[in-house]
Image 1 (cartoon, one colour):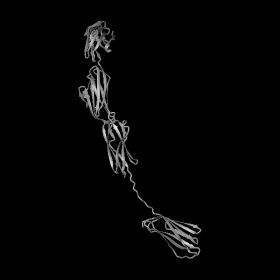
Image 2: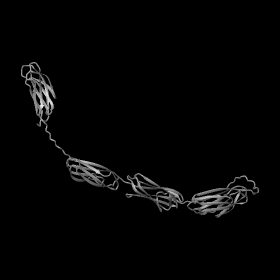
Image 3: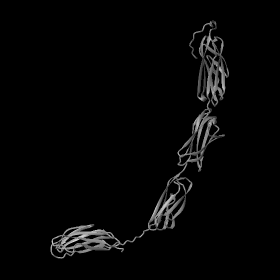
Image 4: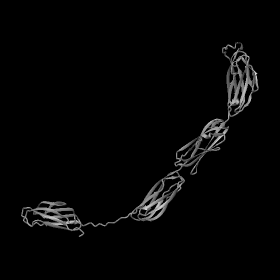
Length: 470
C-alpha cells in the first residue's frame, strides 16, 4: 500500500458492574505505507457513563460535555507507517444501560509532490590583461564571456564602454547563444593615448534580463625628461668656475637609455680630468644613463676655465627611448679686464748723503685686457730730490717725477721705471709711487723708506727722523 490506512480497535471488558469502573483501550494503527497526518479521533460517550480518566500514548486529548454525554477528542499530528498509538479510557456506568462507544476518525489526505528542476542561464565576464600600460604602447586584452549557469543563454551581447573622449557610444558585439559552460573570447587591442587612470568596463547581456559586468582598471604611465644647466651669468677671462647639468624624469614610468649632451663655445674650457664618467669630443661632453626612475634626477659638475671675452654659450640636450627629448641653454658673459699691480724697490741698503739711490717702479698688467692711458708719479719726502729717471718720458719737479701718459700696458706686460735720487740730509726718506688708470678705474700707491746717513759720522747710527712726502 502506498498511502496511509488507519484501523481502530477497542479492547476492554464486554460487561461491567453498575457503579464500578471499567478500563478500555482504543488502538489506532496505521497499516499503510506512508504516514498519516493531522489524525483526529472522536469518541462519543453516552451520558449514563462517567469518564473518570483517560491517557494517550501520543498527541493531545480533550473532553467536551453536552446533552447527549461526553465527547472525547484525540488529535495526533502524525502516525507513522506501521505504528500503533493507544488511548486508555476509564468509565463508570451510572445507569443500567448499554454503553456504546461511537468512534470516528479522520486524517489529512496524503500530499502529492512533483519535483520540477528550474534551470537558469548565468553570465560571467573576465578581463585578462595588464593593469599598468606604457603610454603609446599597444596591449592586447582578452575578454572572456562565459555561461556558468545551467541553461542556455540566448542572444548574448557584449558592450565595451567608451574608453576615451572620442568614443561616444559603447562598442557592441553579438555573440549569439551560449550553452552551459560555454565561453567566447574577444581580443581587444588598446593603444594608450592618454596618461592617468582608465577603466575598461565590459557589460554582457542575454535574453531574460540576464546581465554581468567586469571592470578592469588600467594605469597609463609615461616617462618624461627635463634637462637644465646652471652656472655663472658673468665671469672674467682667466677665472675658474663650475657649471652643473641636471637631468630629471618628472614622469610616471622609467626613462630608458637616457643620453645627455653638453655643447660649449670656445670661450670656456672644461677641466677634462674632472669629468668622470663623461665622454669628451672636442666641444661636446656626453653622459649615458641606462635607466632613470620616475621622479629621480642626476647632476653632473663641470669645472671650467674662461679663456676669452665675449659670450660663453652652453647648450644641453637630453634624449631617451620613446622619442623623449629636452633641451636647455645658458649664456655666460665673459669680460676681459686689466689688472694692474704696482711694486716699488728702493736702494735696499743705507746710503751716505750725497750718493745716488736707485728706485724701481714696476707696473705689471696681470689682467686679460690692455690697460690704456696709465699715469705714474713718484714723490719724495723732504731732504731728498730726484735727479734722473728712465723708462718713459717724464718731468722732474721739486720732490717728484711725473711720467707722461703711458698709452698701453698689454696683458702680462711689465713696465719698469727707474728714478735716481740724491739725499741732502741724513735720515729715513720716503719714496711713494702712484699709478692711476681711469679707463680701468684703478688707482694704486706704494711707499718705501730708505736710510741715508752722514758720511762724516758713519760710525754712529743716526736717530730716526720723521719725514713727510711732498
